[in-house]
Length: 214
Length: 214
Picture 1 (cartoon, rainbow over the protein chains, first blue to last red):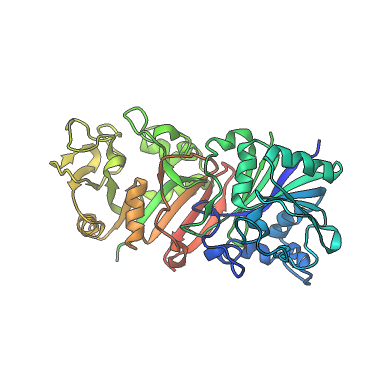
Picture 2 (cartoon, one colour):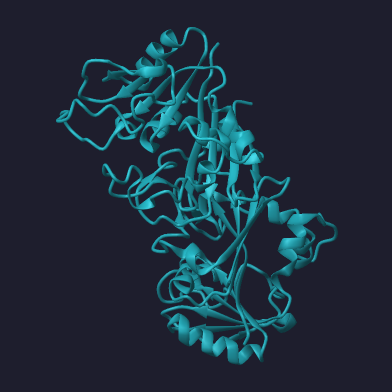
């Protein structure tokens, strides 16, 4: 059975995975880049954005597993872009330019479906108004036996965790107090009972935690 | 200048330092012992409670610094006991029996002052209706040049952090999702900017973080 995985998902000490006030210029709102500084330094992130170099230490070792064996991604609409309500701008095709780093089908959850958009490099965005279970069924079909990644944002990851659909969750706990934004852990009391948990702090200061099915 | 320190202060992944529903039988409410399992195993905890043995690894090394050089403690009323409002039971002298593990003056913050209580072993409980600044002034005087420990609970630690009165904060991030209770980090956005932060995960699964003045 293909697994359902979350990778490189940063959360602040006070439990926020994105800040307040998302906009075109601020995908993570007032958090800016603070939740992902550790990730920007990795070779994986650089490569995703067509750049050379990047660190190859433990942060990279953990970050680099994100794409292996993944055949489709599911993301929430707020990961795709800052628009809310009916789509006003159909030209918007995500933050990632003409060749997004996914290279698989990507299912964007939205109450406002629109036609699929085929990008360069193998990424196709499909827009879906569906429950987590139904979205996963379609993503699994598209993944052709490979794993499905839940890409975020926090409310999407939270919904899939609440529905007990996640097999592997990697969070990076970042030592900042964001104060406001969207919380990852709300409504998930006792989540730890369903997983085997490992933690490691790296010299970048973040603590990588993996939640896997026992 | 004597320092103001917080030690062995556990917080769940979702930011709670105590659960919901404190009572005589449940000092940490529905959290039970889950926030402090790592601490119960240490030699420091065992010794505090007159027991033999206990682990002497890294958890102990961190936990064991709690008493060194401390001349007084300040605690919130909810750390002292589960009573709320005017004191109904003056016989109650804390959870710790006749010989509490503090062995110094302890200032209990309460809107309902009552006479001081002298315990065995050097602990005296004083009851104080005061601001953090005024409580600290009195505790410093009583500490005779030694450091002052802020003992908790979460709202007391939070108030002293908000007033920028803490020089050393040790939290142990425990990989559980409590879901409800009292949050440590609320109202402390940007706290990390005032401190040098170090983190280390130990085999018990908790991540010790120290916040010290740069």
